[in-house]
View (cartoon, one colour):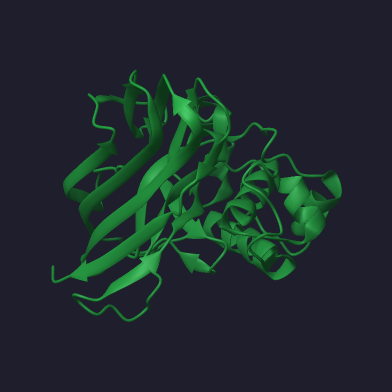
Length: 282
């Protein structure tokens, strides 16, 4: 097991409205999960205007904070802060694909085997990724698919939008982490591997300097079933590591947006999003 990494996170975002909004209902998925390998020492969500917060855990295990604003407001600001201790055990053994052939596996993970509008990919792409793929070891298969996507697509902000599908990104041969994750999800599911979309943060510096604050952004990668959920980051060509902080999981991005809601009013302008990450001594 790797040495733990302690990260302090700050995610600041919000919206300006063209005219006062009388009512809005919102959901925030901005709180890292506590589970084996990831301990949330503290977390807080600050909302302006200040309102009561409700909490629940959704179907996919993500903590959701819901809030309703019933007073007129021209701006909504949401800032999530947390302190997380992260550690990851390295992969030390091969896993035969026969684990996927069990009826219990197929039934248990049907939602992670079924294509969604976001993740569906053309048969010609599926045929292409099968070249050189082996089902002898699921870890090697996942690495093969992730590397295929990374080698085929260029990381290019602005090439796609937040609503783009895997096929649209593939057709452009470019996109961001959300797009590369959607394509990887679609391909692994087409090969019979239960795969889920993971949203969170990546501490981008490979050399950790305690006390150094770096700018970041929301990140996406995948987890595939190999007898247990195992993470891999197709955008960066990495296994999930202690530098990855998990916030939300689902079938695709539509299950995990950091902030979404509905409101009564005219259009809105998104404020600048800021993500800061600071490493601390463990």
